[in-house]
Length: 154
Image (cartoon, rainbow, N blue to C red; front, top):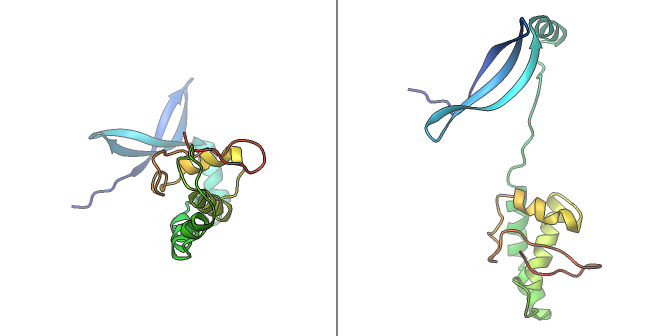
């Protein structure tokens, strides 16, 4: 028996006497079938027009996902012992939840993988699968203050 995690299908919905079509992906959520994504395709005429205009074999849509970029960067930072080297030179602040070396490693990983501002850093970190896995207690590091001063985690 083959079990597909996501099952896409085309569903027609009637509104005001016209049928509109959607590409619907269903999956089991807590043991029950649920719609997990839905994309509007158009009316029957619009669907036919899209199919006749597209060249054979060309994708209609694509989704790009990053895989392993943060893990590769973090592995290199560990192999180079960036955290240990920085922490060997710079003392740790009493009110900081992580060491200066850890902050430098996180900032380096961010600049390599997905550069963003200091204000957007917490949102980026929350979107990564590694959050909370770099040795400190909080899952959302905060880079705040003026200049390049970093203050703890929240």
